[in-house]
Length: 389
Image (tube, rainbow, N blue to C red; front, side):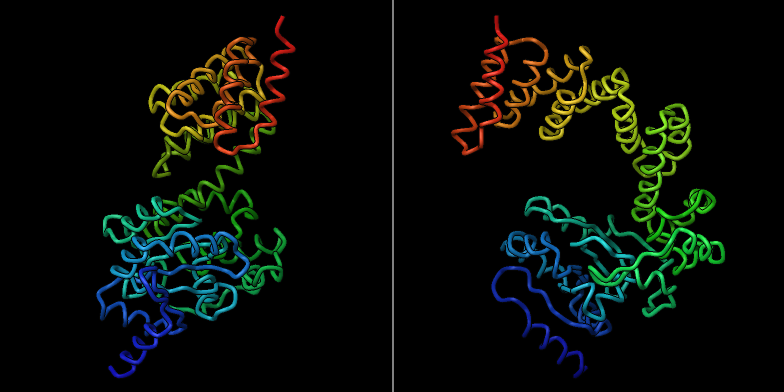
């Protein structure tokens, strides 16, 4: 008990002051777990690296927010680890295959990983993430992971997980030879290595993953297995788009998407990528028109991106007309300079020069008022005026 009390006092001593999130810096995993159990809190881990720019932005903007800090301090023992230099960070990175930063992991007081997500998040988004983190309904059981550290990973895995600038990656032949002798993905080490080098696995290894995915879901969490499935499917769809084999791609998606938790949503994005790459504009139009009819202008920036993509890459008149419908809806809801500029460009491409001129003028006015660089739109406006009879 005295040791635990001393650990807690040390944790408080190194915590940041004020209402921001209070992080401890400790390498004592057992002590951290005991503190969490005593406080009846979860363990929040900010997995960062010194070279990670977005980690620093997260510290400066999100973790420093008083509301975020108060919530985190109430519900978590907050731990911050450099994942490539500190011993505990290295061990956790190896165990869970952490290679993207910042990564946020939540553990219960037994040391079981129950939630994981990645990437910089602004305050409003991160608060929603925190709400999920503390909700048992969003916790995932992962009995495939043992509580042990310092497992006997193959040397090529350890070399590939070294610090930035020190990593050494194995050949496909080495990875596949190792997997041929260690192919039981229900074993933690095998799963961890497979996950790290999934892009270097041969077709037999990938097929084994798909065949065993339902059992892997229950061992390691469907969030993790779906991430791996997405990586595999994305690579396969990319190859089929390049070789212009839409029938094979559709067959593959029909077989694999039911194995994903959000298969229908994932299928939309895979198909959108496939038909854009193949320039099958009728299919692109069909997918996006249905999306717009079903969801409306749910994400203004995403729809602006789709409209701009049409402007840059397609001369299909029907698709161009649809893009004008999307961007018109976007601009009615949000008079953003970038959206107005896209609208003006599309109107010009559609030959609607009078409307394009007015929209470009509006974009320039809004842009100047908001401090945007409007030189591109000024040039566009000049082109529109020269094109008018």
